[in-house]
Length: 563
Image (tube, rainbow, N blue to C red; front, top):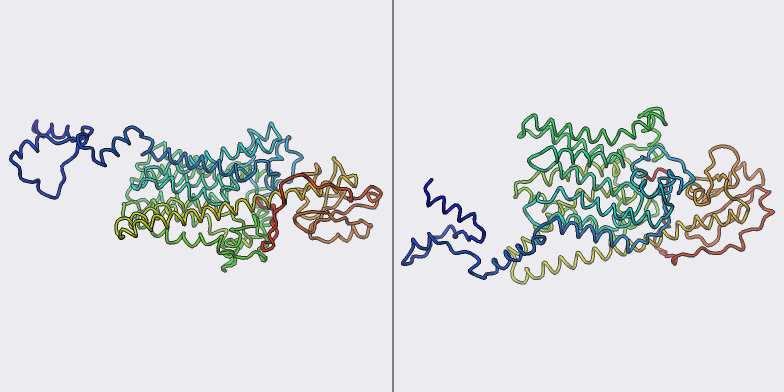
């Protein structure tokens, strides 16, 4: 290579150098050689491009997606903590998980579908304090951090800057994710774990660090909910073994990382299955019985139930009374076109796998709920939403870019304004739902305290044993009692259930619980308890005003197997 060529190469790599335009011959001048030999630096011409470049050099964070992603995750946590009061009493499932620790005792039954992931998550706080506010603040912080770590491996995966922060914002703007950010529930962490696993899997070239990241993320998801992690892990395993363009050694290492990560997350569940349930298959059968039986249901009923549950209740079981409100479920209609646009944009960038793999993983985690279960809960689909978000974000940016490049001047103005208005409307509807359900759950969970007052009025105090239907579990924990497993309980707590025949024969008497949000609460006592004063002098617990929604079915706080 000649010295002049080396000089030109060094000049091209120097900062502030503007490469001459290609495709058109340079205009004829009197000194063509001097123009070619002395390229003009951009800094000498204060053009718009020069201003942008200098601004980026002064503020490098503006071009770094990681800062924008951190801002989105911080806003997610602050919004959740602001709109969902940290003093919200623990729900049914949260009580089960928190009662593993003595400050939140007494212990409640730990059924077959539940895993040890959530107790491990809350252990740093729940093991030392019974403060619900402290626990919810801690969980909101970990939820925001997990959202950042979940989408961090995606940074730089797409050529279109802003895709990853927008994906996190799309997922984080859904009211279900905001509501469960401060909850001791597994679904959000399964969602972020699967997103991180797919993001690490797609990093190219694969290194030991990216494989370890995918394994750790899969282990976290499997520790939280094994059934949600198994099917996406199989998708990643098939993708690793089917990547013909990669050397066999690289494919084997990636497949081994996926297998080890999944096995590490399933190991505690399998050990507990062997110790408590007599084996893995017996635990699976027991979990299926708690869930109401899982079998193929080739109808649209489950899909309709999940669509109806988008605006509540938190557990739609049964879902016969829930109605579909398109004002709250209409955003589902935007998902398919955005995914198609995102898939097309990824193909044009030569990154088809970056869209096809998360779409396949999302289908793998959602289809069991849509085809095998007879009831619905909106949080069941959180992992699917999180996996679809990067592709949907890519599609939204593709649509905006197309409108700016192809449309008229009026379209270039109207399309961004229309998109912003649509995003604002979506966020407003989601925040409205968040406020509604936060108030409903506050009222629902205060019902347990009102039942406790009736129990105290009739002399039932710890240590005590309560019987009744499945609604007894959270009431027993609130009252400091244990759910009855055998023998005669101190009282029966019933909701929308008749008095058992043996209790009626023994002359047990029913007493209604006054001023409850959900109707049908009654408490039955043996004859000796009727000599004590009744519940007429009960006072209403302090708390926020109770929301009423005559068009909405009464919400449930949880259910058996609602893990």
